[in-house]
Image 1 (tube, rainbow, N blue to C red):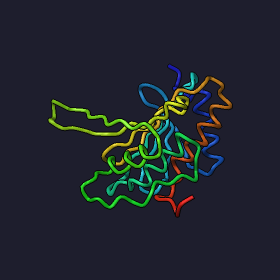
Image 2: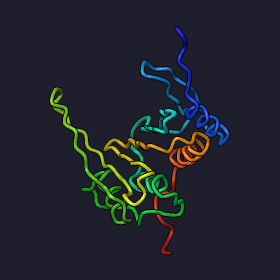
Image 3: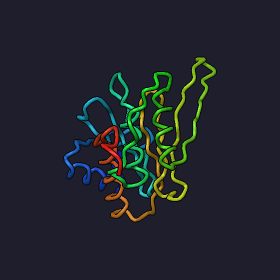
Length: 188
């Protein structure tokens, strides 16, 4: 039996992230190879990518508290728009708003499409909520999901040009892994 090996796209993404001084390592699971980004303060991240251009990146807090809504909203905007300068308005101070409400409202106000998703686990009688954020005018950027526990997921299908796709994905991943400032410093 031959050992699982990372595909070309995942290997190039790993090299690009390592060149940006982000520590990476592979993990071989039953359903393929997973890239783990290690040593990040306060969170864990994994990347799955196949040579068809499909990319799934998951980041979740290592322990409470969850990231602030403004940081998650700014990171989503960076992923979906390539805008490093966008920041949501002043932090929401309404104590009745949840993490995903505050992030979602800021992103909706910035013109992105935000949908609330509720998943019911009937076996354990639990519910999980998340928001899904997209830019219909730029479908190639995929979608971002932010969970009520502070998880951040980016899922996208890129064109199958491995070198260009890998550099683009690595740049987006660097944007996800490098925390964005939480709010705009002032009007523009």
